Every structure is written in C-alpha cells, then in structure tokens.
Amino acid sequence: FPYTTLFRSDYNTYVSKLQKGDFQLYIGGTDLDRRIEPSPLLATGGSINYGRYSDAHMNELLAKCREALGDENYKKAVRELQGYCADELPYIGIAFKSSVLLTSGKIKGDKRPSVTDIFENIEDWYIAKQ
Image (cartoon, rainbow, N blue to C red; front, side):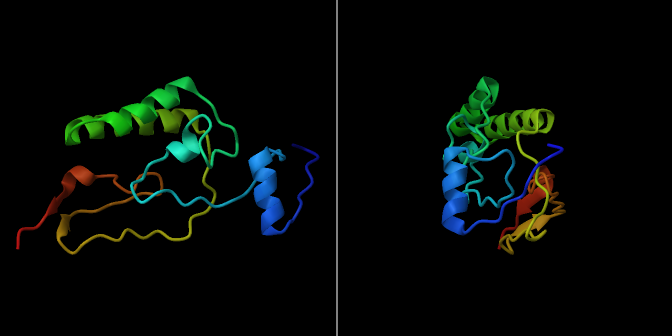
C-alpha cells in the first residue's frame, strides 16, 4: 500500500463502506459477544467479518468450539482455535481500550490475562467456597 490515501468519513458512510467491502484497509473497533464467541468476526460470512476473511479450517475450529461438550473438550477446542489464530493472524489488534479483567470476588487464584488471551492461565483459577 505505498500510495494509500486515508479518508475520514461520518459513521454511516464508514459502516456502509465496511458492509460493501469498499476499502483496502480499515481501522475500527470490535466488541465481541459476552460469551467470547468469535464466529461473527472470524467465520466465513460472519456478521462483522468486514475483511471478508475466509478459511475452511477456521470455520471447522469455530464449530468445534461451539459444539464442544464438557469443560475439557471445550478447553481443547479453544486451545486449537487459539493456536490456529496465532498462526493465521486473520486480524491484528493495534490498540485496546483497557487492560482490565473484571471477575467475581469469588474467583481466586493467580489471574494473569494477556492481550491475546484473557484466560491465559485459567487452569490456576478457582471458585472460593463461602
């Protein structure tokens, strides 16, 4: 992109251009679902997949996460998805609003969230009995 021109636009024009794919590069924010469900961003045809990212294996991994039964199966599916995302890099985060992890006071343990994984060491967390 050696000769790229930046355009500033009002919000409605910006969203319209995103939805139409009328851009070479965009800078924008994304708020994912509270369930940390990345399919809208990463799945082929996802509702906020404005970059038109498409990868059959990514779609399979996303489905595995949605369909995983039990904690261990879910953790395994998420680890596989995280590894693939790290290798594939479909999107690159350039800024984050905050570096805050909010949890219930009942959740104890050594919580060490990272920018790329808020559940970095979830295996060291536990729920305190009252």
